[in-house]
Image 1 (cartoon, one colour):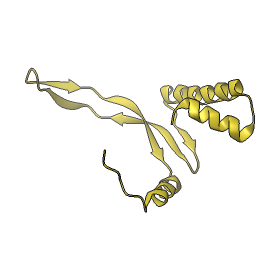
Image 2 (tube, helix red, strand yellow):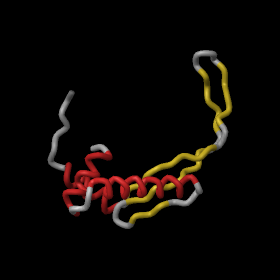
Image 3 (tube, helix red, strand yellow):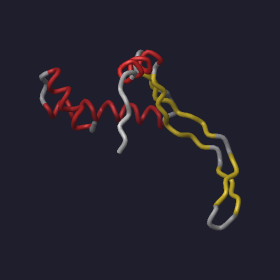
Image 4 (cartoon, one colour):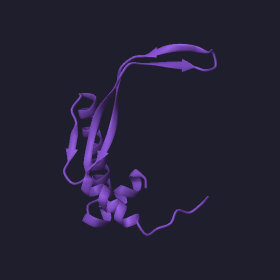
Length: 101
């Protein structure tokens, strides 16, 4: 599903104009991004949380040059789904078999 598909579903469900739905979706994503950049987590009860995770400093290896290097501590955005959301996804896929490609 793409952002355009989400906009189309919002238009179908609410009847608002497509341009207004696009602006709303863009504003939603901008609000999440700006809060994560500022170090603030975003919580949606029953859906999940957009959080900033801290990655510790570690030693890595550049295998092409066979050298070790230090990767400094850094922060990454992450999504943690709410337990009720995880359970609904599990239930909806419990009877389905995976298809091989």
